[in-house]
Image 1 (cartoon, rainbow, N blue to C red):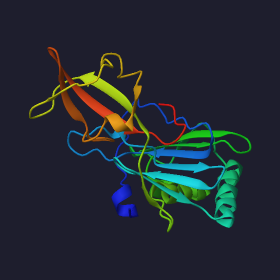
Image 2 (cartoon, rainbow, N blue to C red):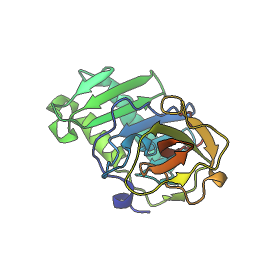
Image 3 (tube, helix red, strand yellow):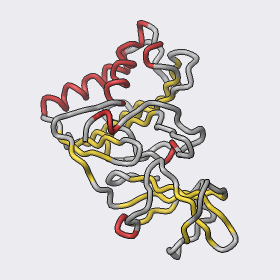
Image 4 (cartoon, rainbow, N blue to C red):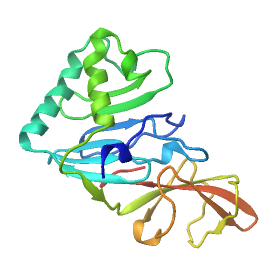
Length: 222
């Protein structure tokens, strides 16, 4: 799976909850593609680095997995650690007035949790190392990357209609209440369902729902 197929920066849906991957050294979420009718907040997490050097790279609906060499991992961890030395680093960093948004969490060393707004190309000189690293991770490519099949998905649903027909809801889990408190469903129950930012139109009783299934990386809590 190549980088162009994995990533594109558009607008992250407001109010989406950040990914929680407790065992990760670093987690990055950025603006997910929002094609007409798609739900950007349901795209998988963009980049995850684990202590083992394993990486996960997400696109609109799929995830690739790879493995960094020890030297590559150390170099990346140093760049992440050096971010703390930049002036103006805090919980919120603004590059400019643009609507682009990224959320970076670094757990190794002194914890770093920041939301960055504005286009990476608009970063002031002092923050260009941060912008460069975000841009690299947001479109990360590596020779080891290969397609990965998630074991589970986060189910979210809200009342609404999409153009065209709708499919019945075949599962016992109720859709009500999942818009803000998602439920986790195993992947083997979701064959042939659209996933990631692509929603499904569902009819359950007299109610129409817009349903999304966000692919989860290992140990991710929605």
